[in-house]
Length: 387
Image 1 (cartoon, rainbow, N blue to C red):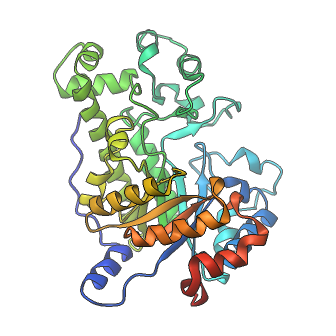
Image 2: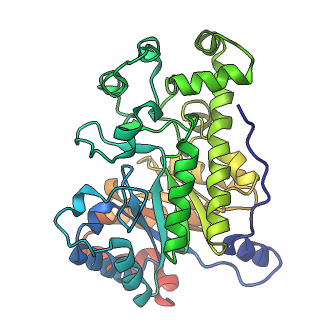
């Protein structure tokens, strides 16, 4: 395997603001973000409603899911149009419309991309979908590794059957080790950020679904080549930590590549990533070495998905992420879908006290119309009033 490329990232606005703050200048504004899932992109009316609600609630940034399952809720020559847009006019561009509406309300927009999770097990795949065209790019679980290595094996069926009952596996994941995957994802990122004046690129599902993935032929071949071993499956089974290290390196190399591509295409961009908040789980089960990503400058802002209902756990996870963020910032992920209004207000205060530079709520679907003005006033207070 080729080791992760050492890059000298272009300095983003987020990094410049942080440096200015450390030098005693005006600190960067607090992030008051909202994850906007693709259900808000299915019609012009839905787009307008989501933006207006966010503005009323006092948010200042929208993280918009323009790539949910290997598709595009924007104009793309590389990726198929989201199936949910089938009933809309061909010239309806959800991201373009949202950008226009968001700018009118003074909101920044971050393009939210699900990187490796690329297709549902349930919905039929369009013929031009990346998983349909390249089934050999899909991650394989250990339980079907031997079957998947056989010539002509029905890979998608094997993966789907093996994943039944596993709550951590939400569909088909692309393997970052498969030849062609990194190139494809880099092209997707370059097209997206060069074609739209977004303020940020937000990487999500840039992780393995679990420790028993990826035992695909491509992943094992790369592992064997790295260690000059002709029986990579046997080596992976006998040396699990060695294989864990390999998977972390492969994923970090992909993050570095996408980061560099995005910054080259749009130097003003802020790079962020939604990460597993528990460091041990991230490193040893999801192979998501986000402390390394922050330390090497691949990511400007980490967004730990601190979705525990226990506020003490939330505080601890945010504080720990802040310790490991190096020179980057931390935006705490807040589970709006599982908290009362009063608990949401407390989480915003807790994030500030733990050292976060702001919050991102999951998701827009969880906002109650009657709480929007209260949220602006009680959670965001003076920060929202000054917007």
